[in-house]
Length: 235
Length: 303
Image 1 (tube, each protein chain N blue to C red):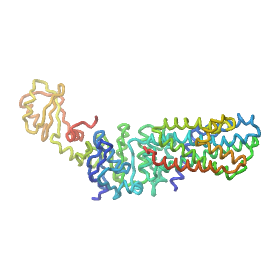
Image 2 (image 1 turned 45 degrees about the horizontal axis):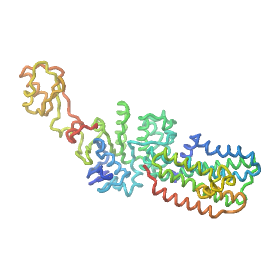
Image 3 (image 1 turned 180 degrees about the horizontal axis):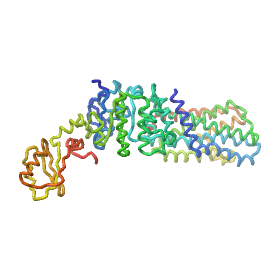
Image 4 (image 1 turned 45 degrees about the vertical axis):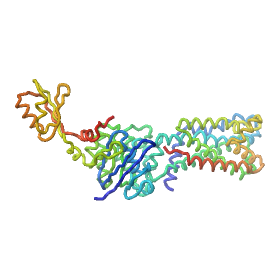
């Protein structure tokens, strides 16, 4: 256990030493909030759930796949396999780091939105919390699958971004879903980030817990973890 | 004599390629065993099976009495491995890598002492990406020693080091053995095998071709010596070929090379004096491990 926490702290240090990654996760949603917030004013609670989902997608798809694939490609995981700590432990440590990074990004977003735009916190707080956790895990699981299948780090990064960009737009994480054409909205609903956005939207507006969304995310986490673990090449 | 590693009939293939074709060997406690052979001989695959990184197709492997494939977790607490190709995250600092490693083992060494011993103290706060090849090499060896291993596996430990650093590393390896560990090292530097190892296993095409002390391997050659000289007058090589102990006589440019055994210098000098042939630049060479290798495998070590 001691090794796991020390590994997590080390991975956290390494994460913070990549300023671009930190900026992208923390600043991107804040910039969007600033750009769009002034237009929407009090309607900012229509934007923020999407931005929360944006943070989660950014962490899971633009950071996780590249780092994991790089560790594999450069032989970092293989060297660990000669120590008492199994390479899978690094995955666990990275997951914790990205969950923390996501949480910090979301916290910053919520603070900024509350202070500058009068954001009301979600009416169904427990529902919001559940969807958030499920969404964070689902995005990381998605990133894990990308890292598992990609033959090298460059491809892992590329696939991650190729999945990330259309998804954040079509699912309403950048532009509110209402502003999308109906056909696009429908596509967005079945993409992995879709349930995260709809679930958070419902929680914020007080419509309660979107059970379908939650179950969809849970299934995603389970399937991606099992498949990823089986398919992931360690060298 | 306690046996620390036992390998019997090891076999491993990758698809249609047979990498290891029935390798058997034992390693004794406290010895430094060298494994030498050309590329593709199966040395790295063999060592990877000992470390538990690869599962053999057939055969038995016991390291410290444990099966690396089945009891790997326990074994990894007691061995240290330096891989030929390895890396750490680019931004990880030297001291952080060592400190992190200590959390992996039940009874770790003092990482500050390892930092000093392996000359890494000046680079304590340097990031991995900023280290030279030699510094990275030393870091990986130091990392292999963090757990106070009973057996240490080293793969090409002095590649990329200048001769001075190489000698310093050899001394450190002797120190590791003096502290009670057994060392298995894979190398393609014959001098390294000759100087550092108690016994050497010559591996070729997936088999152990010879396993003995470097001295015995060289003595096993029929032609243990070589003479070179430049004849200053007319000279007939056949006049030497008939001398006792002479194995062969070749021409190398304007030099004559005589290979053989026994009191070769005396024999050749006498024959040359008898025929009144003046010579210059007379030099003798002892056969080296490289010659033994060449004789046993039929090819040079460097491809």
